[in-house]
Length: 196
Image (tube, rainbow, N blue to C red; front, side):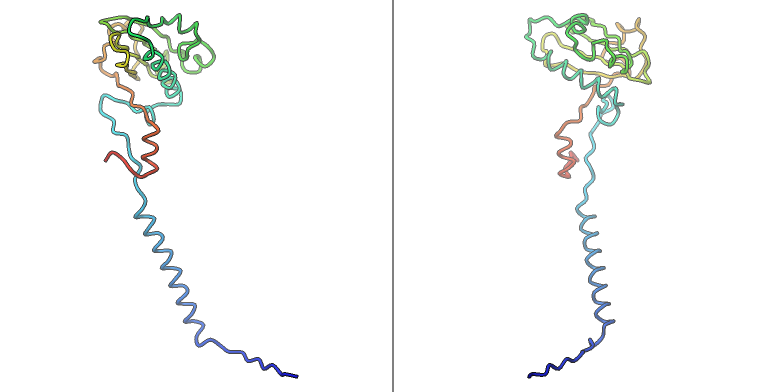
């Protein structure tokens, strides 16, 4: 029979091994933190001019939803031929085209009253809100010669119904063109790119 001899060996210095292990862990954490800080990029910001307003950062939820409906409306206008008539407010209401339809959503969004005005080879759809604390006022300006040249403008100031004819001038103080926040903006944000 073979006898097995066991012998316990103590490490030269357990303190020394613990210190080396702690230093290694701390160095790894510091290196990781430094790399994260170096790789972190600032999210790109939209460049907004003085006469523009951002649909992403400046609008309330109600204004965003009205603007989304107006974008759909504008895309339908752009599909119309040069000689095709633009719809009246009554036609838009009958077709249940938001935001012109007077339903529960219309009430929740501030009861915008819409008016169509034809002036200087342009057609204007003006949406006035009774309470500008709920939503601002919107203006869709359609160039009848070139429907691709359609703008959506916004103003937060209260405009009285009697002032609409005067206020539809795009140079009227306070109107701002709406700058959309697009998927491209979001993609750039995640890729760490911007229009610096």
